[in-house]
Every structure is written in C-alpha cells, then in structure tokens.
Image: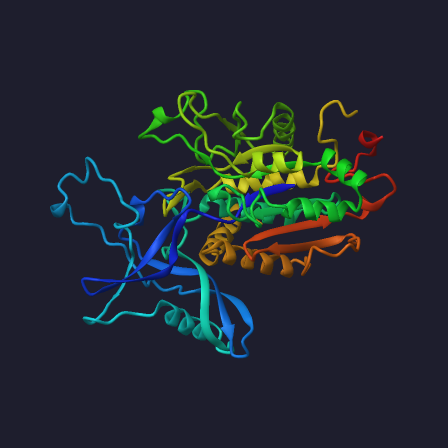
Length: 359
Length: 88
C-alpha cells in the first residue's frame, strides 16, 4: 500500500465573507493548515472548491467550481509605509491577508453566493441552481507549475506537498503489473491533523481493507502481511540555511527519495521497513537519502504514524526532498518524483516477503 | 513513460488539481481511463472479483486498488505479497 494526502495549506473563504473597506470588495479568509503566509502577497490568485446548492426542485446538490482566472490579490504594504518590514515583519491573519476582488461604489457590495451561482452557470450551463447554500473554497496561485533553473533541474509549483506524491503513487499504481494486490490511498485533511471522515485518522482505509478481507481472521492476516509506504515530501538542506539540518542528514534535491526517521515516532519508519525499501531501491538503481530532524528542533509528521496507529500495519515514511514547504510556490528536484515512482512501482510488484526472517 | 513525460504530466496535473476536490476528480478520471471501476459505495458486502477498483470519500479522499487473481486462493489471504508460508 502507498499513502499520500490531497490537501495543502491555503486560505479558505469564511461562511459570511463579504467585506467592503475603502471601496474595495474583499473576502474574509481562514488559514487552512500551516501556511507560510509571506509568499501569498502580490500573487495572482484564483478560487476553487466545492459548493452545495439548492436545485430548482428543492433537492440538495454539490458541484466543483474553479474560477481559473486571477480574480483576487493580496497586495503588500509598501515599504515606505513600514520601514522596518525587512527586519521585523509579522502578519496578522485576521486583518492583513484579506484578498481584494474588486472596487465598488460607495454603499454597494457584492453578494458572494450570487457570484458563485453565476460561476456555476458558467461552468455547468445545464445546471439548475436556485441558491447557493455553502462551500469549501480555497484561494490558489494561478501561476502554472514549471521547470526552472539554468538546466531546468527544478520543478516550481504550488501544492507539491503533497500532490507530487499523489501523482507519483498514482503513476506507480498504473504501472504495476497487477500480479500482487496493491492499494493507493490519498487522504484529505493531513495538514490539519487527519481527524475527519476523509482523513487518515478516519475509517476509510480500514473499511476498504475489511471489505477486501471479508472476515476477521482474513483481515488480521491481511494487515499482518501488508506494508504501507507513506509518501510525503521531505526538507532538502537549504544552501542559505544549512544549519537548520543535522550535518549528516541533509538531503539534496535530485539525489533521490528521502527515508524519514524519527525515534519519537513522528515518522513511522522502522529498521525493518527501511531495510526492505533499501533493498527494493537497489534493485531498480534508485538512490536513497535519509532525514532526521535536528535533535534541538521539533519534527513534522505525516499520515504514516496515524495510519500505522489506526490499522496496525508496518509503515515507512519517504518523500521527495523539497524547498519552501507550505509556501505558495514550492520547489522540488526534477528527478526525485521520477525516482520515487520507480521505487513505488517496484514495491507494488514485489512478490517476496515484506518481513525479515520470513524464509 | 520517460522522466520528461512524467514531469510534464505532473505539471498538467498540478494545474487542474487546485483543491483536494479537484485532485480527487482528476485522479478519478485518470483511473477510469486506465480501466479502474468506480465503486459508488463501500457498504456492499459482496466480495470483489479480481480487478481494478477505486472509490472516493467526501469527494476529497480516494482509494484505488488492484485485486490480484490469487487473492482469493484458499488460505492465501496475502495482501501485496502472496507468500503463504508466512501465513502458516
């Protein structure tokens, strides 16, 4: 099994979001997950997500919308109005990051739900929206993912954490030879702790495994004979901030996937799961790196320990090394996703035992 | 698929996967095109025949899986690696 997560830190629209200040129409936003806020200023933002509405016949419906165009921006404050900005800038998420959507005449405003109704009509001309009820909408950067660098060695994009892993796991599954039963799970809500109906702490994976097993003894054997690779990006050692890594554990971009280890179980890797993956990597000439956080710093986490806890399945944490995690534009190596895909495909096709001393 | 094609398709995926909902929608389309059968509900007790399946939860999480032909052999309830010796 391979697991990843579909969500990324972002700004989400509040339920009653309309604000008109100084003649500008703005939307109130909540911060979803651990957003690195500074890079959100001065970007060409669009808006997308899920909307629930009442149809003409009174029934409840949901649909996905995506404005696609840059419809909003969070302008920086000019340095002339904050001379200390480069020395001590802090951001108040309640007051400082409301996106600006348009200018309005004095005394006027915009009805956000009416805007959404119009957008649904644009995307789905056949739809029959009576009124928009609620929504889960995320602002995002419209700048497209692209290869960057003098030799195009890097991929710059939003949401590399963790769509890079979702896409890589998907490609590995599509390439699997099908001789072994294999599974890929991509959970929502990892960035906010995974405790939800769709999160890794919810029952989704267990219900699927129980259905596959059929009965309790088979389920127990299935879990016992399975392994989860939790794929989520790692922190590459940054040339400007190299002291933030342990000397001996500084993964480099384009040098291969990173096995993530933490004695306090913030990562679920153990010596047995890591040993197996190192052997599989050697079989397909995929180089591996390893990461442990500095002993004087707190460690991040993934769906790995949560899945291991919920299911009781042996687990390994691994991921592509990146810069700028949780920025609106992250950076990965152009080789690492590809290498991770080779490794996951080999894992999916592996027919031998997943444990040591199994004969 | 080459590394160049892989990265190109990754960039295409990132462009449409603007939210978890859109990511699941995009992955579902790719899976359907690859012959994976969409299971509308996980509530059924019917055993699944060997094949390729996927299902979603909350439109924002997704599980896709391949049930290998040997999955239902007697005692061979192995998952991922069919190694009956370890089940004995």
